[in-house]
Amino acid sequence: NAIYLAGLSGVVPEWPVDHATLRARAAAHWPASVRDYVQGGCGDEATQDANAAAFGHWGLTPRMMVDTARRDLSTSLFGRALPSPLFMAPIGVNGICTDDGHGDLAAARAAAATGVPLCASTLANDPLEDVRAACGDTPALFQLYTPRDPDVAASLVARAEAAGYAAIVVTLDTWVTGWRPRDLNTGNFPQLRGHVLANYFTDPAFRALLPQPPEQDAQAAIMTWAATFGRVLTWADLPWLRSLTSLPIVLKGICHPDDARRAIDAGADGIYVSNHGGRQANGGIAAIDLLPDIAAVVAGRVPVLFDSGIRSGTDVIKAVALGADLVGVGRPYCYGLALGGADGCAHVLKCLLAEADLLMAVDGWPTLAAVREAGARRTDR
Ligand code: FNR
Image (tube, rainbow, N blue to C red):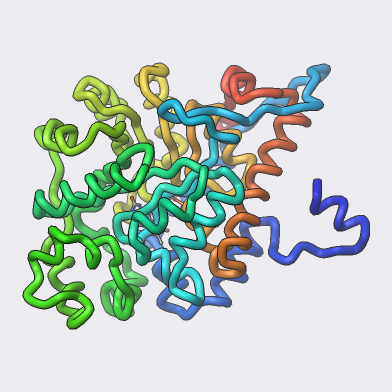
């Protein structure tokens, strides 16, 4: 509404409101290695492209004569009230997104400004305590890439709990990095060079593994990190993860209904449907097409989080209609960070929410429950 009103006075928004323009502007802003790291995916990027394209074959059916003068997008997660179902998916090495190297703090400030929670990555360039503090009153989640050293894993989780995160999101699909030609062609992980893996570098258990403190030899610390990164998790590890924290544990990367069922049986507190934005494995089914079957199996027993392919407010609503309780956005908020730091990031989040809100207004759904009840229909079969 603010943008429409400003437009009446001839004021053009500082940043684009649509994904295609935003993506192109961010690509032009960044050095090639950052662009390729953020925008790239696995193999020929077929899964990544399918993730976004698949929203096109789900359609919504408007209802009329419903009072939608006020819409309520609010929801909750683990007892915390949230203004909307939107959250920011974890982005590792987010520092590269902003010119000042503090993309994580900028995203956290956008979370504080909008009420949209941030799921902070293990691979952040700012320490998790600082990121949590910058989120202000907005709840935050901590994403765990489980290190091979159990003491480092326990330390990271304990720090996250002490810092006040609302849940631990354990990523299951990335104990090893997928085949990413864009990164491989430029030398694997060029984006890590010269950047600080703040959570590791400040961690006492990780520092104990190093012959020299990271302040003296950052490159050696990065190499130690690479050598100790990525524990292969199996179902047998869940009790150990559970023993590390009293926080809710959400499993990220669930793509099969049987895995969702097993996760709940094993005590997981949340299911996070995601194929990592097509960055880890190619040749997969679009994440949004996986969601309905998983939501049916979960049947409201635990929250269902979703990401991979969200590019618009309409996509957010479709994900809710297909069974997501919380909807994560990844790359688009990185583009906002690139163009305008915390303000640019908040702009992207507000545009997603404004479009979702307008869609609910026009299509006759005053609440998320109404969206869910209306559902979405597959239009290509
Ligand atoms: C990611 N993703 C990710 N996931 C995770 O669990 N931990 C991480 O550190 C990262 N890092 C990361 C970096 C970058 C640059 C991207 C683009 C993605 C995956 C992320 O959380 C999410 O699953 C996808 O980004 C969602 O897909 P879209 O919205 O980017 O299509």
